[in-house]
Length: 135
Image 1 (cartoon, rainbow, N blue to C red):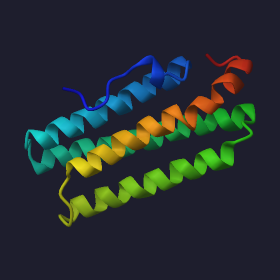
Image 2: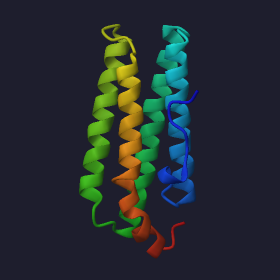
Image 3: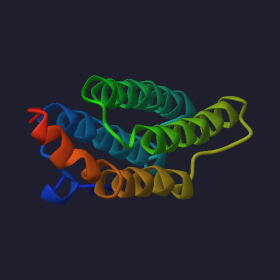
Image 4: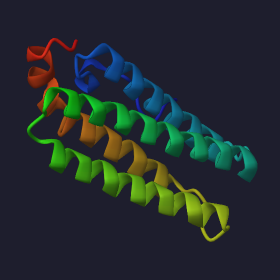
């Protein structure tokens, strides 16, 4: 069973961003499954590394659109991105140093944060981007 399931509630109605969000959801679900099935530290670390890297890529893509179109709420949105990246980098560093084991709390944090960010902060840019022709 997937931790997060894609639904229209998570759509920002922008094809490329929805595709990236779907990939992030798949990665969180993969991390959750690996952790719950005890797939081993190496595999879990690899998935976590991929998730961190892809999250940076996704945030960068969103931020490029903010700059390109002059999104008026860029500063606040970017602050959320930075805070999230710092948090997951800390998880990643502690996991790599074996100071941390992945737990449902961490995976729940990742899934809750992504869900809340999409449904709250990201949904705010839909009309703005649509007005700029991004769909």
